[in-house]
Image (cartoon, rainbow, N blue to C red; front, side, top):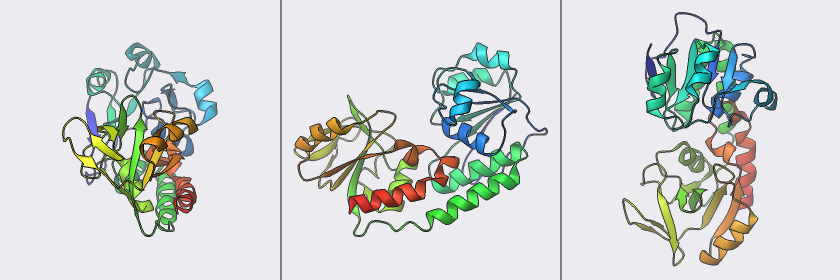
Length: 272
């Protein structure tokens, strides 16, 4: 059985049958399945699939995104497994393909997110619903009034060590649409950084220094930054405005994006 990685611009993948037993290994895609109305078809989710609450309480959990319980998945007898290139582990997906077809999204911008929504809609025979969700997201994102003038911005996702979002991430896409110019836009993925002399320093591959950080965003996930982390970082970056942000609004690329434009506009106004 195949692993299909859906990259941006690829021809849509479709199954020769409507899946009746789906296991989702991606929180944002799990929420999308709910909003598509696939209540009976979804039989397994991860422990990080916290939306919707009703599914989190009632659906079988098959471990985490990076430590899937293969035996639990097998026992559910799925006919489709939904995964993501960044969130799931390739070696585990290669084992899971022996159980059922594995479809893997590869999302790093709004266009590829819309493609993911439409392909899942096609595979599950929910095309009308998926197109409606995607169209609403696109229309609402066009209403965002980005920050002007833009601010040189960092976005932290982790602590001990600090890690930030680089330029080839979905987070970077939403930052750009807000007028938050990612200071690390030329760095790949999620570099480890240090804060030295009021600057962000990439500590591994590049040894680059990014100074004049006007705005620093601290995400609520995967690391749950709080107010006391702002207080701690403010001493290291006295001239930088530091804000806590809802990580789901920046990194969940499914139907959660329906709520993102309103949230992002409020954040832009707060950053002024």
